[in-house]
Image (cartoon, rainbow, N blue to C red):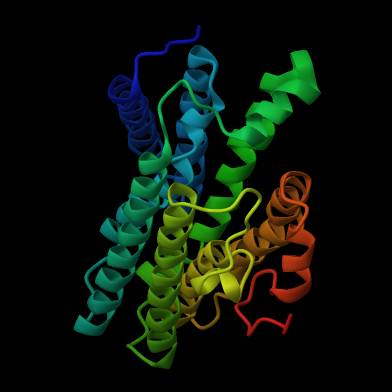
Length: 295
């Protein structure tokens, strides 16, 4: 089924899908009360993903899943925070800080996606490529690669929220580092997105590549900000429990995914569409913002 209800109608349908997915996730928490909260969160996350995938198939558009990446951490964080007994005032400050930053990050990213999404008449170019190359196997690929794999990545990143929100260590330097890195990450990503939007919608020469602002120091400053956000959550996890090194697995997995999958895919497309991008690659750092090399 391929509905094309217009932009407003599309957002209404997608909002309804996510309400259903949230209800499904909440029901998992109600039924599986005896499980560890991390296991409950994982199962609820998977159930919500399956429900969103069902809507993607029904609407014949895998971009229905696109906002899931930025929305899912919010209910996970809220759920785990509500399960935590009230500690001292320092612990409460950490919890509120983490919740506030996660909500700010998630809602801003979702708003950025919504600003650029025209509706159910549009599907991400990467998904369209998968349709062409996988043929009748597309929906299996969509389920495993476009829906479940990112959900697993994000949930791994959210593991740092458990020690951050449930740890009882007093405030310290780890918290300061977490605030600086996470707040800086959100700011960098927001500025990079704003500069990219101004470039895309403004006047430019045919084949021109963005090399202004943050984009003159990094070819993907928005991705650098995204990765830094997850490492910032890991710092908060260490603040809550210095022994929770395992909580860094998510930030590491997401970093590897961007470095060896997402970025190379985008750069290949850029080289195909803008031949002078090779010159940009020679001058500008891939991810970490660094002074550009002289022309």
